[in-house]
Image (tube, rainbow, N blue to C red; front, side, top):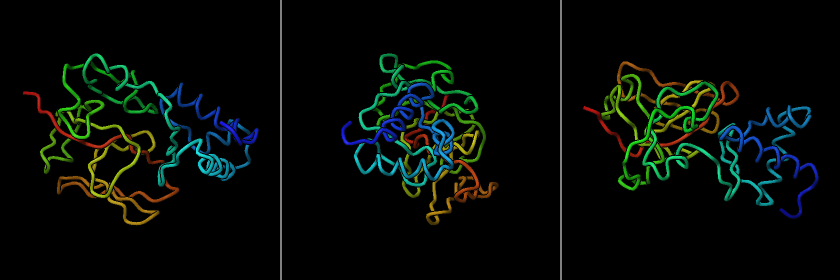
Length: 209
């Protein structure tokens, strides 16, 4: 990548290394700690400069919302490319949903049966989405993405917990995760209070009988 300063090249190299090892981008705080910045704001300044130069893409509203164009990242969808779709079971704390260690098994199912194509199947736990026909034990077909559109049903990591809810952005600093079950109140998320990462969106559901 041309026209990068030495510090920007250092930040980019760390992002690449972190994504290769962890399967997800680092937070601003992690970048600051690794490279000795005084605050996460310094990380943000470097990230914005890298984005302006086309070295990375930034996803608004996500603490790990960093993408490197054309960078291959090993995950469940790639490992399962020749084995059908991976079924993701209980998600390990701190790891991305589609990490290899979370795979229960693979099933011979064509990803193109869903639109957009599914990257993996997530085993549902609980009854918070029953009003749209998603029940405990169902397999949720998920398209891997780090962004969410208004009203989509998404897989979201809140700090170390993963949930499936409907995405509602109230404003730039306020997000609601809405259950499809009248017994559950919306989860209210405000900027700076918790770390929120979108890991995928629902594209279908499979019920095992």
